[in-house]
Image (cartoon, rainbow, N blue to C red; front, side, top):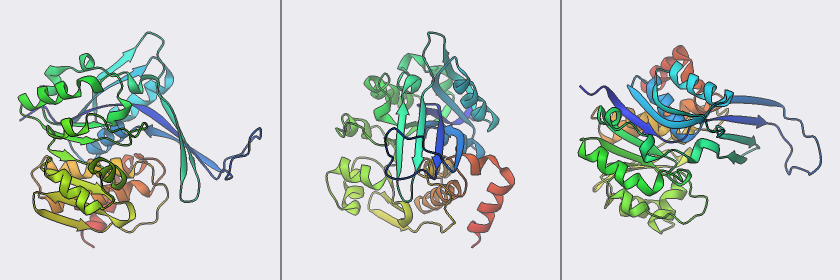
Length: 311
């Protein structure tokens, strides 16, 4: 049996989430938030954390700065059981990245200082550790400035070692979507949201987007937010509705979906089961602030899954 079921490579940082700010934000004013949360952030780290919380043996590759935010971020992952031996602590003055999220009613501002978020390189990845895994997941492709030129090499290395590969590009801030079709040919599971799927596939029809993507990628799961998720594998297409819960915070819901989906995928589940667990994990995430807080409470997490799996 491989040492780890899933290796996750990507960014590691904290999210500072502020709630209850006025909209619009007037300049030159001291604006008071009603409440705040400081929590583990970044798509990659949320996926790794929540995979481990769901019982998947997970290791993580990333960079952090030699600062308190990097230490807290790593501790949060380790507390969830993630192997963080592949996280490289930089001693050159680089600062750990941070994202500030300003939550409004139905929308949000997202402000990110990249720092070490964009600095992970192919050389940072312990290939012996990678080869001890069953599956590789990569998030935030277009924030991985240093790694992106060699992502194809990373995927080839993983494939040669017998690993499956999943990819969640997240948004492309430049809206150019370079390299994506080349990389998708190496991917087993693609996990875009609706906007990303439509952009990449070049169509406004999400079903047509999933069909086009599935001609290249064996399994595609498109996250549709409140509408649930659309899965396509070959000619098989499944649309599963979302799980209705009282939403506290949507931050990290898509990444939590990834964790739920991959947790079942690496254990050989069918497409419907993978989608169902993705929807459950995404819904669980929204019931507490941030993308990992609901997963940190084991009793609450397990009760949620029991309740909704039998509903």
